[in-house]
Length: 280
Image (cartoon, rainbow, N blue to C red; front, side):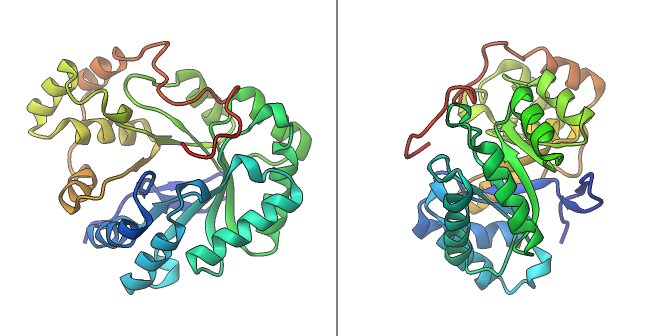
């Protein structure tokens, strides 16, 4: 079985570049989806407290028969659980739902800057890491100013910044910031929430490589060196999304996709403004 290539964090450790996410998958369907992903070759599973399917992830992992060291689990602390005590409670609740002894990566889901608690939350993640309960700590949806504050206040940068990133919103400045600080960029919504499936440029590139548009968008992320999270409940689509390791995009393809970037291409919330909704 072919597995994902690895990316290397600044701390010397590594993680699968291509991951499987479970956003919007109902808990009762999650175990089967996770099992299908693991059987396909995925070894990084990405969930979050707000997804309300950590139990399903845990069940799928347990049913896989894989040794614990053979898969990488990410979960996230939600916006209403920032702050020292709340973050600890949220973490242990996630750990219990996942039925794990530790998580490989724990992320702050959003900075929620107006609440001014993300530094305190980060310090709590560092403590949990030092207690052996988390292997790696990172963030999602942090802008450069949030990261500047985090690093200045604590002296430690995240290994990962997971951000919205797709051909319609390519985040050049944020990717450059991450790279200059040795922070690994990880893409969520790599297919633009379905808005790019009929794009003529992507369709032409897909036909050229005898692939589908989704595979082109995922391959593009890998070519950029990004970690990337894809999702599906369909075993066929799960396999299709993983089948991006054995072809390459050429310079012409990459230039054509680069031209699809839009300054106002963000489809998800603005990290500077996003606060406390109960769902995504």
